[in-house]
Amino acid sequence: MGISAVVGLANIAILTAMLIIYAKVYKNTKAVFTIGLMFFVGLLMLHNIIAVYAYFAMAPLYAVGLLPYFVAIHIAELAGLSILFRVTLL
Image (spheres, rainbow, N blue to C red):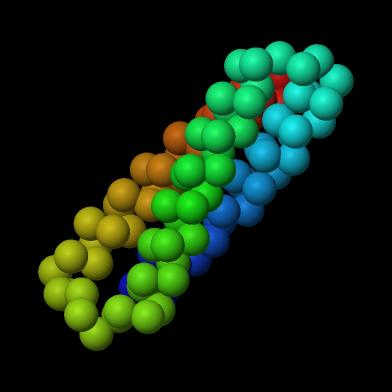
C-alpha cells in the first residue's frame, strides 16, 4: 500500500510540473489545445489524489492480493507520465 501511495505522489509531482508548464505555454500562446492538456492533467491529478487518499483512509478494506496490481497500475502510469513530461520539455 505504501509503495502505491509513494508512486501516486510521484505522479502528482510530475502532473503538477506539467500543469505549470502548460499554464505558461497558454499564457504565451493562448492555444486552445493547451487548455485541453491542462484539463487532462487536472483530471489525472484528481485521480491520483483520490487514490493516495484512499490508500491511507481505506487500507484495511483492500485485499492483500490486490496490492501488486495497484502498484503495477501506478508504475505504468508513472512511466507514461514520465514520457509525456519528457516530450513536453522538448
